[in-house]
Image (cartoon, rainbow, N blue to C red; front, side, top):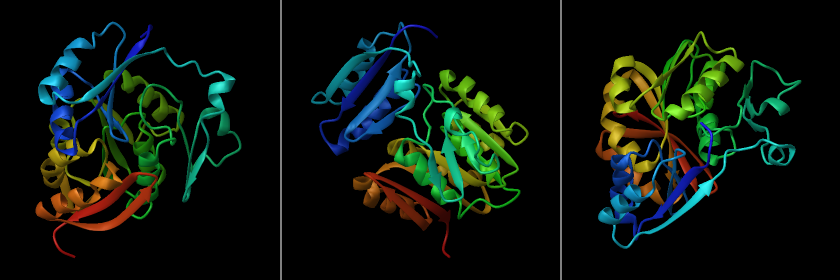
Length: 279
């Protein structure tokens, strides 16, 4: 889609309003959110009016602060390419096509940077890729919720998973995800599915591993359906969680009958592997 996108960033007045503001943005039509420190950020398609979104968040939190800016389509010139690097994460490497030449295709995840989230440049992506290497087993069935570029689904395939559902609700991310799956020769194992993870996850269940790199308030809403969709002995890897939210998340997962198996922290972000029941 041509034309400028609109970036809407909202800073809730306090931590207690983060979930209500998130819910208001989704209710207004936001296709996805990510956290940038204290800010909740969504991108609106060219031609979309920001006013209904702003009105919705003000109804949810009258004291919030917001910022609306125009974002022109990315032009991956040589200058822009200098900002995208290759990231070696354990046995795997995430790299853009121009840095993938000469690398082992069995352990290199080639991602074409686009509007879809997940190039290896964000700490949450890196955290999940690191944690996956102690979790994914040969022949596993996996669901990747909020798949974005499909980087995590492809990583699961590289680690030996045999069937991976990459679920993404943003229609503008689907083509990028599908192209990345083909680029990494993972089409036989990774299926990209457009839709709501809460609706689609039970349809692909049972799976042994759920990957969810999503805003923390949505993770909390998804915990029950994730629990119901795991095969016996299954695990979930959660990310998109700020370090300051760690204790809140630990309390929530314990209250829902989960236990923590492993953790990862980078910059201000925290990722975790959880399983049901007691050890």
